[in-house]
Length: 315
Length: 256
Image (tube, rainbow over the protein chains, first blue to last red):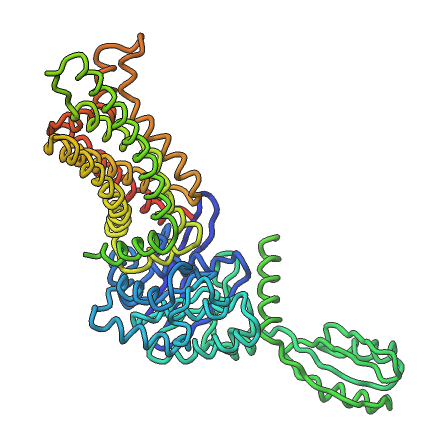
């Protein structure tokens, strides 16, 4: 559906994208994850034919963004960052204009506009000026604008930025409902959003793709260390030193004021040493109150990836 | 016909906001004032002429009509940059430019739609001055041909102003810069012919500047003459501006 190959974009001498490649399958929701300034928006601007790449190929629906941009645009829905809208129009007028501009046939305009309004839940504000709408409703109008031509590909640049938590959940639901027959690319710098909404994630950092997988696989594969959380009753320094001597333990930290202390043991993921830990605790006659292994969240992985990347660059 | 959607949208923006009304009102107030003054002095002049020579034929065509269009075009020079300043600058500032250029609209349709919307306001604005003609016809015998060529010249010049304004607007996201630069460039084109009157510039150079001057190409319309070279001048000016606008829009794709 969308193929990005060796995409590079320079702004003057500033390299914003460096050899970015990824694919999006039909009907998939792809999360495009990266810190601010990582090159997410630039990639999206190239996919939506707003900008031209310095080098590399981007094909949408099998068409080249540089040669067949007009054909692609007819089948594309785009919501740019910050959701720019014409504030001096009513919702209905605006959507009719967009439908007309997107070459929806005049007979179908009315039908498609009302369909877009109902699937984003904005029928009851259709005669209001956009300038009078709240941020959440403007975002919905932005989404309605993107889907009014029934596009096969939807590109959404940070669709939940600046919304309150309730609105964020609503918008995510809307996006999920819009997928299915549509292919969706969604960029965000908010990590939970990806695991909630997307089937696959591309993580981009400093203009390079650093990871690409399903959210759950990312968690599995990118985990370099595990954390084992323990609640133990005993002499903390003694416990710390004993645990530290175990094979595979990277670091031990403890906290807490009562007799029962919380320990966080960082272990390498090659070996499961939970059995060894428990037998050592029993052997020393410490009281074990709790033990669990914690999977790193996507947020941790992201931070890990980004910091690793930084180290590489410094070297 | 891709420009129709843009044209409709731009017209709505002009007339839903106060812009069109303010621009048209100011245009009519200024022109009304000038017309009133011209008619007054023409009447005074006529009365004096008749006192000296009862057989004298006084001519409204030179006294009023020529000046009427001259004044109208000068007021346009002041006011039209305000009408065109928002065309692209506003969209660039608010970010809607990014969205609209990802719709399946060709750049040329975008530009034509925007120019036509401002032209529609221009036509309404200039059309409303036809009230002056009603006034002239009811008190005198003005030359209809002259009035028509005057309007033709005024409208050609107005569209030339608008297309230059559209080009400048495509270059900047600041509406104020857009208006000021447009005004400056148009004023330079307006007074370019004066180079010939500066003592040091003579001969070919002076002639070239004179040919580039808008005022120079506008004069014969007020005399009731449609000179092909004048029409070609304005059409070329408009075409060049549209071409430059298209290049400016295209350059956005390469820059950030």
